[in-house]
Image 1 (cartoon, rainbow, N blue to C red):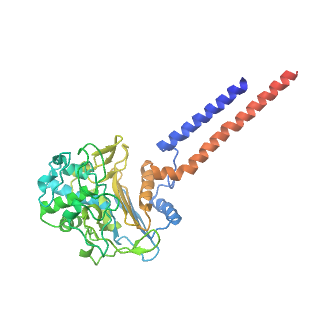
Image 2: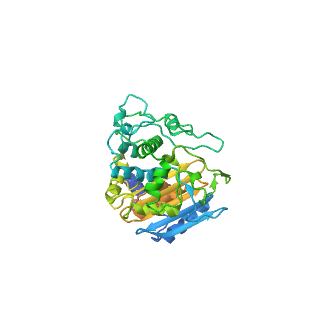
Image 3: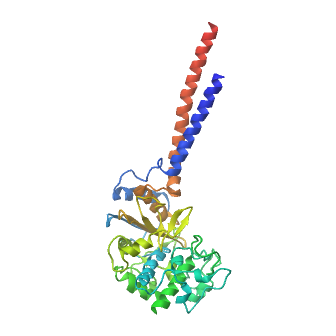
Length: 420
């Protein structure tokens, strides 16, 4: 009977230890950051080790602290890159586009909550079972418009015909992983669903309202005021820029693609320019007021009650009260991956632009969030798995060995007592 009680206590202790480890793993307090040191230099050194583990063609990285550039790192297997080297940044385009849209809102030329259709003449949303009048600028910016295109644009190679904006909205030809149709497929405003077509539609809105091309407007409204001189949505208009080589994951290179969906996927920029853009989110600038920046970074769409999107940027703080981390990632086109984050409270941020690896930039940015704010996600959890499993085993051994010793000792005493 006593042995049974001892075994029961051992099992209970093991279960409690397992529960503690699991809780600590999920909630992050047992996870270790990529480096225990709190300097930008230490973070860069830790990421260098990560870069050594897998292929990447080129990387440009900038860290911001207290509203200033604190550290930079550049790497390439061939052609050198620096802070002015221009990379295609894919969906970071959306965040930059939101600045242009919100400037029109500030000028009273757009209303966040009026039907987007009132601004359109060249193209209109196709009829569906849902009310297209509920599709607004606010919902398009926050991926809650009801559009179900799930578009990730690939762009067009030099041998392909580039679609017009209207043709792309009707059915995007450079959408290999979705049907590419901009159509309302669920009740607008009832949930989050990422939509590339939402930003292509916003691109059309800008052209309709301003009477300018999207490139012209964004240059005048955003790039020039922020002195982003190494940025363009149309590469052919700034051929003098220092463009990075685009590496694929097998180490070969390819040419730049051309996009119809400029607002959603076509921005080309450098870490130097993106630093200016990120700092515009935390300092006085001539594009958007502090009030509009706050509105832009306020949650508009949620997943499980966690705010995931504002009016343009993704939200990364997961309802954490000590930070307001916003930003965006970009990926695709074998193999571009980019990431930008800024904490509006601490004015710290990170920018990683790379080609040749599908997720290196995003994973480093996720590591930065945990290192800086203690907010862990899948990437951090995966890296910590061996460490946490080691803790689990050590706990089991620490419970089991003393328990076996105590049980054997008590059994030995009982045996001696019976013999007597």
